Image (tube, rainbow, N blue to C red):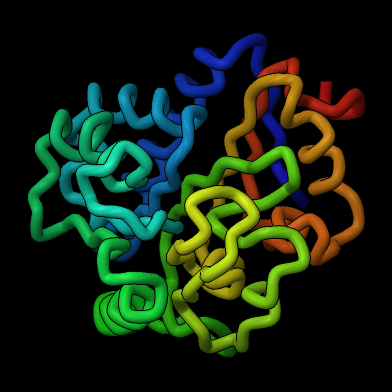
Length: 240
């Protein structure tokens, strides 16, 4: 069952999300000795990262991964890594050895191949599914229902269960070349935390909570492992 929390405004969403992520990272460290956290780009997660950075002990010992990346240089204003670096990684002084960025500047094919190898080498396997298990993945959602760089109807949604990281060559949202974790890796994660604020996301959230469909990639996440945090503007009527 999907867990849904609605909040009065975006700031409260970020506050609740940061507190939740901190608790779950602590739980993972207590159970397995290490916590693996994957980050996404976008304006909604950014404020959560800033608040997490104010709790450096909560994240400093975590292994940091990325859900997707644009094929740009790491200092480019479109880079998800740059966003994370400025809002969380540098302010919280997370050691460089614990940060596993996607090499977008290598292009989608080489970048995806390199990241898949690193994921497989560093993460534990998950029975019967993708060979990498993240503890927590922070996701946004597009108005079209996409998550990470998995877009509606894309062939990447049909990737095999052992595919970890995928090349995207024709993203409908610029830039066209990207790298993304596979749907199977997202489904294998112990928890996905999806953040959405603003009225422009309300239809996507409603569609996500409907029947699973490749036309709405977010609807394909494992609902029993999904936590959704919304402001009132993004919440469908039944969630208010």
